[in-house]
Length: 209
Image 1 (cartoon, rainbow, N blue to C red):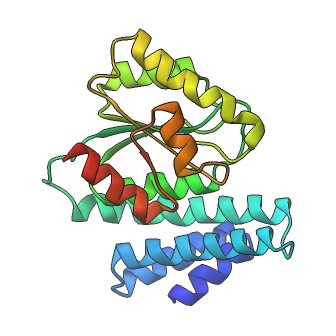
Image 2: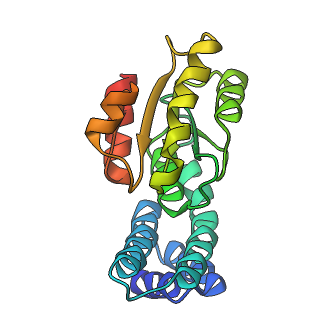
Protein backbone atom coordinates (compact mmCIF):
# COMPACT_ATOMS: atom_id res chain seq x y z
CA UNK A 1 0.00 0.00 0.00
CA UNK A 2 2.84 2.41 0.77
CA UNK A 3 4.28 1.76 -2.69
CA UNK A 4 0.89 2.72 -4.16
CA UNK A 5 0.96 5.95 -2.15
CA UNK A 6 4.42 6.77 -3.49
CA UNK A 7 3.36 6.02 -7.06
CA UNK A 8 0.28 8.22 -6.72
CA UNK A 9 2.46 11.16 -5.71
CA UNK A 10 4.95 10.56 -8.50
CA UNK A 11 2.06 10.47 -10.98
CA UNK A 12 0.58 13.66 -9.50
CA UNK A 13 -2.73 11.99 -8.61
CA UNK A 14 -3.90 13.82 -5.48
CA UNK A 15 -7.10 11.79 -5.09
CA UNK A 16 -5.19 8.50 -5.25
CA UNK A 17 -2.57 9.80 -2.83
CA UNK A 18 -5.22 10.75 -0.28
CA UNK A 19 -7.13 7.49 -0.69
CA UNK A 20 -3.93 5.47 -0.54
CA UNK A 21 -2.75 7.24 2.60
CA UNK A 22 -6.08 6.58 4.30
CA UNK A 23 -6.06 2.93 3.21
CA UNK A 24 -2.53 2.50 4.58
CA UNK A 25 -3.60 3.97 7.92
CA UNK A 26 -6.70 1.77 7.98
CA UNK A 27 -4.50 -1.27 7.42
CA UNK A 28 -2.44 -0.35 10.47
CA UNK A 29 0.54 1.43 8.95
CA UNK A 30 2.37 3.80 11.29
CA UNK A 31 1.48 7.41 10.34
CA UNK A 32 5.21 8.22 10.30
CA UNK A 33 5.78 5.42 7.77
CA UNK A 34 3.07 6.83 5.50
CA UNK A 35 4.64 10.27 5.80
CA UNK A 36 8.02 8.79 4.93
CA UNK A 37 6.51 7.23 1.81
CA UNK A 38 5.08 10.58 0.74
CA UNK A 39 8.41 12.30 1.38
CA UNK A 40 10.35 9.64 -0.50
CA UNK A 41 8.08 10.07 -3.50
CA UNK A 42 8.52 13.82 -3.63
CA UNK A 43 12.27 13.45 -3.28
CA UNK A 44 12.17 10.96 -6.17
CA UNK A 45 10.37 13.36 -8.48
CA UNK A 46 12.69 16.15 -7.34
CA UNK A 47 15.72 14.05 -8.29
CA UNK A 48 14.17 13.36 -11.68
CA UNK A 49 13.62 17.08 -12.16
CA UNK A 50 17.28 17.78 -11.39
CA UNK A 51 18.33 15.17 -13.96
CA UNK A 52 16.03 16.65 -16.60
CA UNK A 53 13.77 13.58 -16.55
CA UNK A 54 10.77 15.46 -15.15
CA UNK A 55 9.44 18.97 -15.75
CA UNK A 56 7.97 21.73 -13.62
CA UNK A 57 4.29 20.85 -14.25
CA UNK A 58 4.99 17.31 -13.05
CA UNK A 59 6.73 18.71 -9.97
CA UNK A 60 3.73 20.90 -9.16
CA UNK A 61 1.25 18.05 -9.60
CA UNK A 62 3.39 15.81 -7.39
CA UNK A 63 3.54 18.53 -4.73
CA UNK A 64 -0.26 18.83 -4.75
CA UNK A 65 -0.57 15.04 -4.46
CA UNK A 66 1.83 15.01 -1.52
CA UNK A 67 -0.16 17.75 0.21
CA UNK A 68 -3.35 15.71 -0.24
CA UNK A 69 -1.68 12.70 1.36
CA UNK A 70 -0.17 14.73 4.19
CA UNK A 71 -3.59 16.22 4.95
CA UNK A 72 -4.84 12.69 5.62
CA UNK A 73 -1.83 11.71 7.74
CA UNK A 74 -1.56 14.83 9.91
CA UNK A 75 -4.61 14.12 12.13
CA UNK A 76 -3.22 10.65 12.88
CA UNK A 77 0.15 12.17 13.76
CA UNK A 78 -1.52 14.74 15.99
CA UNK A 79 -3.50 12.01 17.73
CA UNK A 80 -0.34 10.01 18.35
CA UNK A 81 1.31 13.10 19.84
CA UNK A 82 -1.72 14.14 21.92
CA UNK A 83 -0.79 15.25 25.40
CA UNK A 84 2.83 15.99 24.50
CA UNK A 85 4.15 19.48 25.14
CA UNK A 86 5.35 21.30 22.04
CA UNK A 87 9.12 21.43 21.66
CA UNK A 88 9.01 24.97 20.31
CA UNK A 89 7.27 27.32 17.89
CA UNK A 90 8.66 27.57 14.36
CA UNK A 91 7.70 30.09 11.69
CA UNK A 92 8.62 28.78 8.24
CA UNK A 93 8.22 29.99 4.67
CA UNK A 94 9.86 30.46 1.28
CA UNK A 95 11.52 33.84 0.81
CA UNK A 96 10.04 36.71 -1.17
CA UNK A 97 9.88 36.30 -4.99
CA UNK A 98 10.58 32.55 -4.73
CA UNK A 99 7.56 30.31 -5.41
CA UNK A 100 9.22 26.95 -4.80
CA UNK A 101 7.82 25.22 -1.75
CA UNK A 102 8.17 21.46 -2.12
CA UNK A 103 11.25 21.22 0.10
CA UNK A 104 9.80 23.69 2.57
CA UNK A 105 6.60 21.65 2.82
CA UNK A 106 8.56 18.51 3.60
CA UNK A 107 10.57 20.30 6.29
CA UNK A 108 7.42 21.76 7.84
CA UNK A 109 5.82 18.33 7.98
CA UNK A 110 8.89 16.71 9.51
CA UNK A 111 9.03 19.44 12.17
CA UNK A 112 5.36 18.90 13.02
CA UNK A 113 5.99 15.18 13.19
CA UNK A 114 8.90 15.88 15.55
CA UNK A 115 6.69 17.76 17.99
CA UNK A 116 7.11 21.41 16.98
CA UNK A 117 4.29 23.92 16.60
CA UNK A 118 4.74 25.00 12.99
CA UNK A 119 3.33 28.17 11.44
CA UNK A 120 3.75 27.83 7.66
CA UNK A 121 3.52 31.14 5.80
CA UNK A 122 3.73 29.50 2.38
CA UNK A 123 5.85 30.91 -0.43
CA UNK A 124 6.87 34.38 -1.65
CA UNK A 125 7.01 35.65 1.95
CA UNK A 126 8.42 39.10 2.71
CA UNK A 127 11.04 39.56 5.46
CA UNK A 128 8.60 41.79 7.34
CA UNK A 129 5.87 39.13 7.33
CA UNK A 130 8.26 36.52 8.74
CA UNK A 131 9.00 38.80 11.68
CA UNK A 132 5.41 39.92 12.22
CA UNK A 133 4.33 36.28 12.49
CA UNK A 134 7.26 35.45 14.77
CA UNK A 135 6.20 38.25 17.12
CA UNK A 136 2.54 37.21 16.96
CA UNK A 137 3.10 33.57 17.93
CA UNK A 138 6.16 34.01 20.13
CA UNK A 139 8.35 31.98 17.79
CA UNK A 140 11.47 30.26 19.03
CA UNK A 141 12.77 29.87 15.49
CA UNK A 142 12.34 31.33 12.02
CA UNK A 143 13.14 28.97 9.13
CA UNK A 144 13.57 30.37 5.63
CA UNK A 145 13.68 28.34 2.41
CA UNK A 146 15.38 29.74 -0.69
CA UNK A 147 15.87 27.84 -3.93
CA UNK A 148 16.94 30.52 -6.39
CA UNK A 149 20.22 32.44 -6.20
CA UNK A 150 18.32 35.48 -7.48
CA UNK A 151 16.22 35.59 -4.30
CA UNK A 152 19.01 34.96 -1.78
CA UNK A 153 19.61 38.69 -1.24
CA UNK A 154 16.32 39.03 0.66
CA UNK A 155 17.24 36.42 3.28
CA UNK A 156 19.60 38.64 5.36
CA UNK A 157 16.75 41.17 5.49
CA UNK A 158 14.82 38.72 7.66
CA UNK A 159 17.64 38.72 10.20
CA UNK A 160 17.77 42.54 10.10
CA UNK A 161 14.02 42.69 10.68
CA UNK A 162 14.39 40.33 13.66
CA UNK A 163 17.06 42.61 15.11
CA UNK A 164 14.91 45.67 14.47
CA UNK A 165 11.95 44.10 16.27
CA UNK A 166 14.11 43.10 19.23
CA UNK A 167 13.49 39.40 18.58
CA UNK A 168 16.89 38.15 17.47
CA UNK A 169 18.15 37.51 21.00
CA UNK A 170 15.52 34.87 21.68
CA UNK A 171 14.62 33.68 18.18
CA UNK A 172 16.89 31.29 16.31
CA UNK A 173 17.24 31.60 12.54
CA UNK A 174 17.92 28.80 10.06
CA UNK A 175 17.98 28.78 6.27
CA UNK A 176 17.91 25.99 3.70
CA UNK A 177 17.37 25.20 0.06
CA UNK A 178 19.24 24.39 -3.11
CA UNK A 179 20.97 27.76 -3.24
CA UNK A 180 22.30 27.61 0.33
CA UNK A 181 25.78 26.61 1.46
CA UNK A 182 27.13 26.42 5.00
CA UNK A 183 29.62 29.18 4.19
CA UNK A 184 26.88 31.55 3.02
CA UNK A 185 24.68 30.73 6.02
CA UNK A 186 27.60 31.60 8.29
CA UNK A 187 28.28 34.83 6.40
CA UNK A 188 24.75 36.17 6.83
CA UNK A 189 24.65 35.26 10.52
CA UNK A 190 22.25 32.31 10.42
CA UNK A 191 22.31 29.87 13.32
CA UNK A 192 22.49 26.93 10.94
CA UNK A 193 21.43 25.22 7.74
CA UNK A 194 20.41 21.69 6.80
CA UNK A 195 20.48 19.67 3.60
CA UNK A 196 17.18 17.84 4.07
CA UNK A 197 14.07 17.64 6.22
CA UNK A 198 15.39 15.05 8.66
CA UNK A 199 18.55 17.10 9.21
CA UNK A 200 16.44 20.23 9.73
CA UNK A 201 14.51 18.53 12.52
CA UNK A 202 17.77 17.47 14.18
CA UNK A 203 19.14 20.99 13.82
CA UNK A 204 16.04 22.48 15.45
CA UNK A 205 16.39 20.08 18.35
CA UNK A 206 20.04 21.04 18.82
CA UNK A 207 19.39 24.79 18.63
CA UNK A 208 16.32 24.81 20.86
CA UNK A 209 17.51 22.32 23.48
